[in-house]
Amino acid sequence: MLRRHVLAPYRGLLLFGLSLVGFAQFVVAIMLSFTGVVLHMELERWLPNLCRRLIHRWLGVEVPRPYRPKPSPPVREADGWYHGDQLYKRTFLLRYRRRHDWIHHDPATHRDHIWELLTPFTGGLVAALPVGLFVLAGFLPVWAAVPMALFGLALGPIALDAYGRWSVSLLGPSDDVGRIWTWIKDRLQVGLQLAASFGLSLVGFGYAVAGLLAVYPGLMALLPYATRDSRRLVNLRRRQIGEWTGVVIEEPYLPVPPPPPPRPDGRYQFGKKLYDSPNHLVRMQVLVTTVKDPATWRDLAWLVLDPFVTLLVGAVPVVAALMGFFVYFWSWVWSRPIALFTSFDLRMGWAYLADFPGWTWAPNWSSPIIGLAAAVLALFVAKPLLRLYALWCRLMLAPTKSAMLARRVDQLTETRAVAVDAQAAELRRIERDLHDGAQARWVAMGLNLGAVERLLDTDPSAARKLLTAARESSAEALVELRRLVRGIHPPVLAERGLGDAIRALALDSAQTLHVTVDLDGRAGAPIEAATYFAVNEVLTNVAKHTSAKQASVDIRHHNNRLRVTVVDDGDGGADPAKGTGLRGVERRLATFDGDMVLTSPPGGPTTVTLEVPCALSSPKTSPYSGTA
Image (tube, rainbow, N blue to C red; front, side):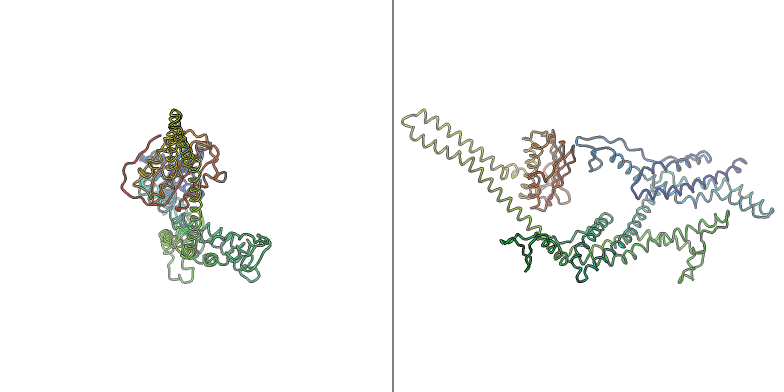
C-alpha cells in the first residue's frame, strides 16, 4: 500500500509528460492531415497504446485497442485494380488510398486525437497534481509543508485512478467520442477553407487593380490580358466552392466568334474596318467580346468586394476562434501550472478582455470562459458561413439568364449544324448503298428477265439458267436491303429496346463481350438510336484498332442520365484526334446534349463512357447480365 502511494506521484508525472508529447504529436498530425499525408497517423498510435499498457500495468484496468483491422491486399479484376469507381493501373496509389480511408474512417483515430488534445489540461493535469503539491510544499514553512506533502502523497493513487478513468473513457471503444471528433475536425477544415478564401481574395484584389487600370483610356487593349489571368483565379474559386459546399457555379463567359473569311481582295472586314492580317482581327474580336461580356465586369466587381466579404465571413470567425481558444482560454489554463515552476506568465498582460476598449466591464475570470465560448461558437457557425459565402459567390459569378440563353442558343446552333451534316451524310450513304447494291442487282435482274423472254421459245435450258440467276440476284438484293434497313434503324432496337439491340451486336462481335443491362424502362427512340450507333462505333473501333480479347458493356440509367460504359483490355492509347470514329460519336451524342469521356492510358485498359440526359418510360421488364 505504501509503495503504491510513493510511486503514484512519479507515475502521474510520467503520464503528464506523455500527455504533453501527445499534444505536440496532435499538432503535427493535424498539420499533416490537411496536406493529405496519412502514413504518420498509424505511427502516432504508439503513444495511446503505451498509455493503455501503463494503465493496465499500474491500475489493473485493461483498455482494449479498438482499431479496425488493416485493409486486405487489393485484388486485380479483369481490367485493373478498382477502389470504388476509380480504376488504377498500378497498386501504389491504390494502396495509399485504401490506407487513407482505413485510417480516416476508423473512429479510434478520432478518439486518439481527442485524447491527445484534451488530456494535457484534464486527466494529465490531475495526474501531475500530487507532484505540484510537493513542489509547492518546498516554498512553504515546515509546519505547512509537511501536511501539504502528506496530502499530495495520499492524493497520488486517487489522481492516478482519475487519470485512468478519463483515459479509458476516451481510448476505449466508444462511437460517441469518434462522432464528436469528426464534427470538430470537419469544422476545423471549414475554418481553413474560410481562411484560404480570405487569402485568395487578397490575390484577387491585385487582379482587380490590374483590371481597373486597363479600363483607363488608352490602356483598353490590355484588358484581355488582365482578364485572362483573373479568369483563371475566378474559375479556380468556382471549382473550390463547388467541391467544398456543393454549390455549382458554371462559367458564364461568352465564346469568341470565329474570324470572318477573307474578302475577294484578300482583306478581312470587322464592322466597318478592313484589316490586312487576321491576327489583328482576332485581337480586336477578343477585345470587343471581353468588353461586351457582362461576366467581365461581374468578375471585376466580385474581385473588388470579395476581400471585404471574406473578412466578415471568413477572417473574423477564424481569428475569433484562434484568439478565443489559444490566447484567452489555453493560456489561462496553462498559466497556473507553469507558475508553480517559474515566474513566467503565459498571459503576459494581454490575455484579459478588459485590456481592450469596450471590454472594460469584463472581469478577469470571465476571459477564459468567453474565449472558449467564442471558439465553440465559431465552430458552430463555420459551415453556415461557408455556405453563405458560396451563395454570395454564385450570385456574383454565376451566368445570368441572358448569358445562359446565349450559350444555349450557341450550343443548339452548333448541335443543329452537326445533326444536319450527320443527316446529310447518312442520306448520301443510303443513296450510295442503294445505287451500288440493290439497284445494280435489280438492273441485272431486269436484263436477265428480258433475255429469258427472248430465249424462252428457242432455248428453254438457257432461259432456265437465267431465271435461276435472277432468283439469286433477287435474294441477294433482299439481303442487302435488310442490311441497309438495319443500318438505318435495326428492327430489334425498335421492337426490343437498347439492351437487346446491344446484345445482338455482341453476338456478331469477334471479341468476348460481356453485356450488363439495368434499365427501368425505355428511352425515346431518337436517343436509343443515337446511343446504339455510338456503341456500335466504339465496338467497331475496338475490333479494328486494338488487340483486345474481351470487352464489357454496362448500360444503366441514373439521375435522369442514360450511361453506357464500354471497357476493353486492349493496349490503350486511343485518341479522338487520330480518327473520325470517336469524333463522330461525340457529334452524335452532342445533338442530345450528351457527352463522351475517354480514358485510354498507354498499355490499357480503355474506358469509354457515354452519357445522354433522358427520362425512361414504361415499367422495368427484367435486368440482365450475360456474356455473348
